[in-house]
Length: 101
Image 1 (cartoon, rainbow, N blue to C red):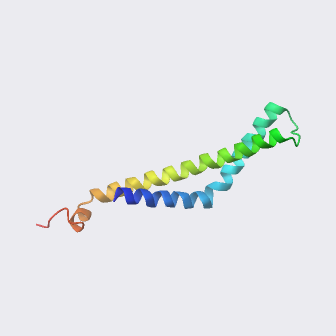
Image 2: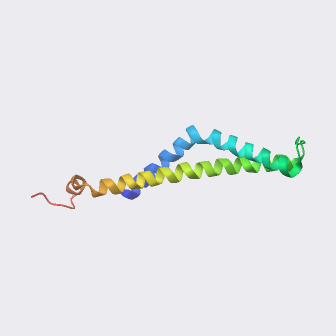
């Protein structure tokens, strides 16, 4: 049960990431990329290729980190809920692992 619940939690975490975490991850990564490119290449940034690539990679990294956090958190919460359900005596009774008195 815990493995199934972990998969359900991962799916829920992915759905929540798409609804809530995708845009903020991109914004935060882009902000850090602009600051990084500004410190490396100087401000104001010119429309050269290397500063644009730096900002794009940092945006991708921000989205990747945000997605990892959401999916890992959802998986952990789902796994923990599955372990709690497995530990309940009612679940053991109805799954046939325990006989009635």
